[in-house]
Image (cartoon, rainbow, N blue to C red):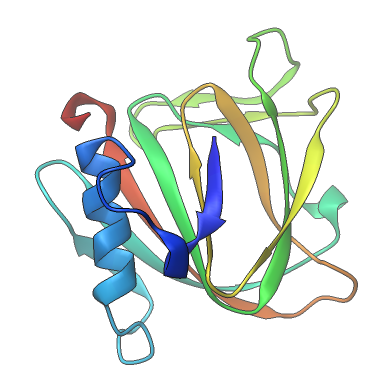
Length: 153
């Protein structure tokens, strides 16, 4: 997992596919882009999400196999719970190849990070994550997720 601020992205510090995603996030006007799914490069794509944060218990930890997430918080803030996926967590919903997602019931030793406007995080397939958790009270956020195909790394 990587975590940082979009204003402090050092050129050529990340693998090329991740660097391209960060450049896109830095250069795109997300105030004028409606929520939805957009093509990016090759098999990769972008999701512009307008979400309502909820208590942590409202969401399940998730992992992906074919894509990594480059998540960027454009507006609002949320808590993200993260933990290494050791593969031995109780499964809530089996892996869906179509949606590239597996949900766990729980994961021990989740750590929380506060993600605010301008922050970005990169979650690899071995990083279980639980997003849209309210910081204190529920609120609206605008989050952009670049789904980078693992085969493009």
